[in-house]
Amino acid sequence: MRVIRDPLLWLLLLFIALLMAMPYSGPLFANWFPQLERPLYQQDSFAQLALAHIQLVMISSLFAIVIGMGAGILVTRRKGNEFRSLVETLVAAGQTFPPVAVLAIAVPVMGFGDKPAIIALLLYGLLPILQGTLAGIGAVPANAREIAEGVGMSSLQILCKVELPLAAPVILAGIRTSVIINIGTAAIASTVGARTLGSPVIIGLSGFNTAYVIQGAVLVALLAILTDRLFERLSHWLNRHAG
Image (tube, rainbow, N blue to C red; front, side, top):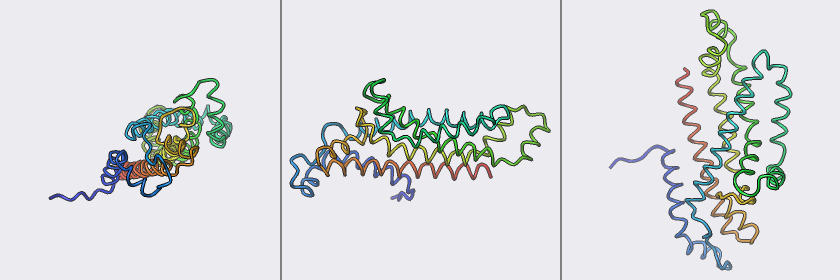
């Protein structure tokens, strides 16, 4: 019998197993919290909440990657360099603005649901990606660009074939940080009607139900760890490929 030795696969199997087993864990939580009338969250399927949580993070992260990398590339060009300080300040301000405050402002305009949550997660996830892009492109050796210019490459070719491939590991590190932050932050999106793994946490906090809080928090934490390990694997692959 073949033994699975891949830690990433074990984490994935554990996450799936917890999602499948959680609906049947009522007796366990009833034993832990006998004072609670309803120790198991049953308003939504945990599997559906996980899928909705992942979808929300993926959509907001995709927008953050496009905007963060795009802004980082633009301000490292000669024509855009004068706007670098302004862009960094604006993006940094976006992350320091509390996500709850962004949700409170966005809800009257966009209504309840995923849209205000995506805006909040987008703003909160931009800074690590922008910083990773700036640091990665800034670390590209000048002689690499000079050689590329010497063989007749255009500015676009230098960017796509020289700068971005060499900067990829650092950019990926910024994306990794952004996504992990957003996995945790997405939990509060349930306060504005978005379906996420934060739903049991928010309802548990408002109803003084510690069992609900644990059920949601454990799954969110495990999802973040699983995603972090996945990015670590991708980072190792990029480093080997670059080498």
